[in-house]
Length: 322
Image (cartoon, rainbow, N blue to C red):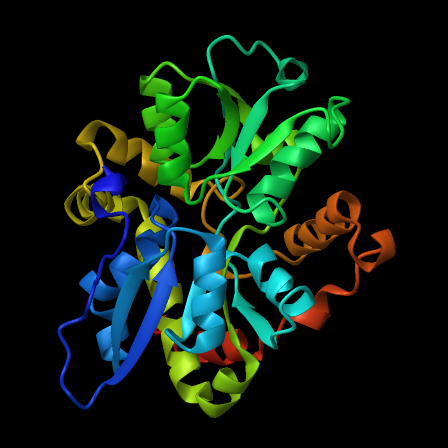
């Protein structure tokens, strides 16, 4: 159960003092299996890194922490990186992909369709980024415009699951595994997978401050190389049982759910991006969604390259052991 570990988790590789320390902040969720694997299988250590993985409770907390230098690398919906550039005016670059979000729209049992959410309250992390925009797009596709429903910011997915379980006035949210599986067990209902409802979407990715990347290019490339190896390990059929065990041991996932979560992660459409590559088409969809729902850029999304610097990833691929 992730909520038992919601505030902070440190996964520190057993490394010599000569290794470079890197602090990373993520949302709790199975999408971070490559990071766990990178630590547990020694990929970061072999790249000369001592990695500390911290959990965040909200997008705002994570964005503020990256901007202030509390940690060096963020993994979350890359729309947060766009928000940092456009709203906070921070020079942030996206350096890798991660996953599709693996989100499903979960609702209270009395909700029969998306249209039934008219006049109800939906709960989100932050109302103007990422998965909130996914949900608002889905509502718009079913004729529900802003003002037809209420939006309540709650925070990270484990907090939204808790709110759905404890307050029936909260009618809907997007949830990813294992929280989606817990919601199902609690009697909540899925209205479908987000990628099936609105198409490809680049959700989680790694992003950093541009100045930090320039000053620490070798460290970033070694970090990404280990992330690539951790991603490959996580989806390899031969590692399925070991991956499920990691989820149970490190994140207290229910054993009955761990195998299904590994299957989700291995699904290239729904789960992890192969080799942690950024899905350029999916990222363009992120920008188009922000332009449509938030009205950014006068409704016309800018070129995706404005927010990307994938040269670090390309160099990292050269460091990966084949």
